[in-house]
Length: 308
Picture 1 (cartoon, rainbow, N blue to C red):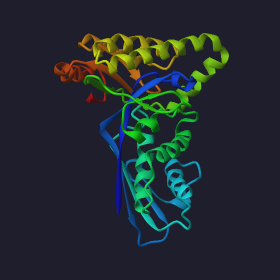
Picture 2 (picture 1 turned 45 degrees about the vertical axis):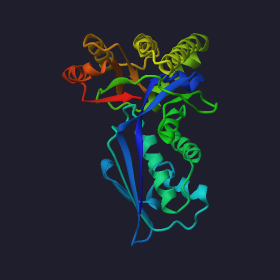
Picture 3 (picture 1 turned 180 degrees about the vertical axis):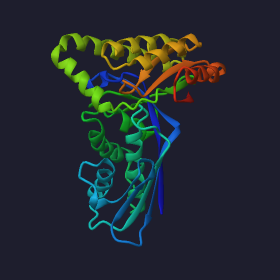
Picture 4 (picture 1 turned 30 degrees about the horizontal axis):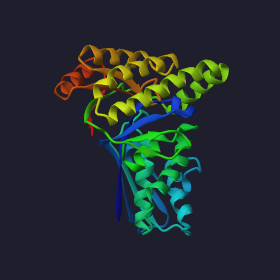
């Protein structure tokens, strides 16, 4: 038997603009995770059990573009394993789906790790990251690559598409409240809508992407220097720019305002938008109060996490 786990993730700054070559910052969220267990099977074939999505199927019955099946097949292809050994794969996750917490990437990374360990050929972080990126295309169409990167390495990362990954240090810990709107919002749709905007008026939206990229750069500098008090205004500015990109929603805007009125230093949507999660920068002593205020205002769940 082999097991593996992968954390969720949250984007701090730079979502959407990262697809167009600007930097983004993301961090792992270990309070939620995907877990995969692989065991020898007494029956023929590879059987995938994902009770969270009511899936119990043999690999051969899944279409080529099914993300879980594709992840399994990619391991064997990368390692040159044929024929496939009979296995039972069980997948569970505490990460809400389509909420900006990287559920798809986490499940994929956990599958890749568990399967490669089971057949005694563990893949490196870099190999897992590359394979996971290919599976992310099934989830998101034109993914930035940030989800699979931060989940595969389980470290805070500064990410520019097409450039080497840069883990970065956190100069002083800071606390976030993550609030889930409860609205499922597939990233693929919002990414596609932003692309339509960009194609219709590239000079206009390139300027917006530039502004978001500048915010990401300033945020990295502040985090590395331990100047976490500078992050709140940067979050607010980033959220305003995401609103102009039409990827916010009334629910996200309402909850960001509630967070600020309850004492948060700043708040913004995180991820694809149109639903999913927001993040609020808070003082540690005030985190529980702000989380409760968000729940009272309609958030379906909250997570308090320290970035350190």
